[in-house]
Image (cartoon, rainbow, N blue to C red; front, side):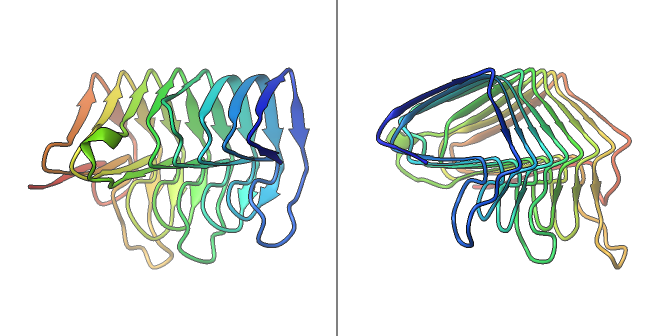
Length: 239
C-alpha cells in the first residue's frame, strides 16, 4: 500500500498475494503517489479491484518491461485497475496474459481497466484475458466534459490475441470517450478475440469504440483477423 509517496520497483516479482474482502490491488494499491515500475512481474495475485495493481488518483505512473499474468479481480480490472491519474501514463513493452475479472457478474477489463486516465500504450501484448462484460483485453472510459481534462487512449504496435468476453462488446478492446479526447489504434494486431455468451449470442469481437461531439476515434494500419463475434469492429459516434 503506497499513499502520498514515491515508489520505484525494478526487477521485482510480486507473486500470489490476496487482499482481504473489499480491498483493492492484490499485488499493489497506490494513491496520490509517483509510481515507476520496470523489469518486473505481477503474477497470480487476487484483489477486489485490480488483481495485480490498483491505482487511484496517482500523480504519475510509468511502466516498462512489466508482465501481469494470471491475476484476477472480484470486480473490474483483472490485471490492473487505474482511475483518475493526474498526468499522462506511458507504458511500454508491457504484457497482460491470462488475467480475468469475476466471470459470474458484469465486470470489465480482463487485462486492464482504465478510467479518466491519459494513456499511451506501446509495444504491448494483451492476450488470453477474460472479462464477463466489456473489454476482455482493455477497457478504457473517459466521459469528462471539461476540455481542460482531456484524457486519450493511444495504442501503437500492440497485439490483442485470444481475449474473451461473455456478455457484451469489445473482446479485444472497448474504448469510450465523451466530448473531448482521442482513441487511436496504430500498427496494432487483433486476432482470435471472441465475444459470445453461453446462449450463442454474438457481440463485437475485436474493437468497439464510442465517441461524442469533438472527440475522435481512429484505427490506422491495423490488422484485424480471425476474430469471432457479430462484427469484428464497430465505431459508434453520437453528435
